[in-house]
Amino acid sequence: MNWAFTSSGNVTETYAAGLLREMLEIPSSSYQERELADYLAEAMTDLGFRAHIDGVGNAIGVIERGDGPTVMLLGHMDTVSGQFPVRSEDGRLYGRGAVDAKGPLAAMICAAAGAVDFPGRIVVVGVVEEETPRSRGAMAIRATHARPDALIIGEPSGWSSVVLGYKGKLDLRYTVKCPATHPSNPVPKASELAVACWDALVDLLGPDASHGVFDRPGATLCRLNGDLTTATADLSIRIPPGFDVDELVSGLCDRLPAGHLEVLNSVAACRVGRADPAVRALVSGIRQLHARPRLVVKTATSDMNTLAEVWDVPMATYGPGDSSLDHADDEHIVLSDYLRGIDVLSTAISELAHLPVRTDDRACDAPLPVRSLR
Image (cartoon, rainbow, N blue to C red; front, side, top):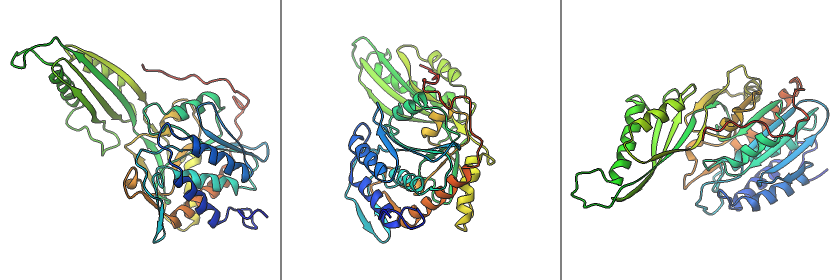
């Protein structure tokens, strides 16, 4: 028996903790994920996966044990910048990415490796560049992989919570140039026009706009650079389901007397129901550990949005870790919660073994259509 596995085929707690620590020791800020991808490909191979790194740098591991359904577990390898020393203290493991989202990804790898009785195909994916506007890793997966029969996205939900959906996101850039003039000239200056663009956006969204409410839009002024002659403003709007992006962009353009407004990125909001098979499978895993599951929605955006745009399959987001620690300087995961997360995912995989197998595009390797709003 490989030392990484128990006699029943499950990954040992010692191995699981060591895997996550090794992942945290490898810096992998966005665009710098290759070293971690190499490590994960080797680790998954040792655990019995058929593993490789694809053309954009995603680490992919596949276990095939029969003709049953395909379940994809997808998390991201990249983190925000700002590495700090990895350490264990009072049952907590500290390190950049501990919760967002190396903890959830490590839990997925361990759960999949231990799913010895699963009668189909399990695909574990560590994607690149989730923390960037383009989500290039997830975009590549949806364009090159056939739709799975179920999808679980790895993000910190808390080990006893399941995420049903996320707000979407609209990223805009406003640029404007004006002739050189004296500061006392009453004509609008470029910097003033950029500020006016932000004010116009806030007015269009209305007084009820909020980042704290799922069914309302919320705006952020991400960057503002300008002087009298040139200015640039980067604007990000988190959008609820059913939000009319075209109407907002058109309305904002109508209020701008000069300059150019560019749509950098747009991804729709997504939400599944409580009866979704992926949700029910995760809820079953939580209940087996004698906890009361919480079903939540998030006002941020994740790769669930990117994949839900083209994959109409059972899906949910799950992962151990406290999301309030995302990007924090004391980011850490409680190791007992991490191990519970592995158990929940193991049960969920077992539950999803009963899904019907899709036949429409199982053998399709051609890119799926991608909607562009640019």
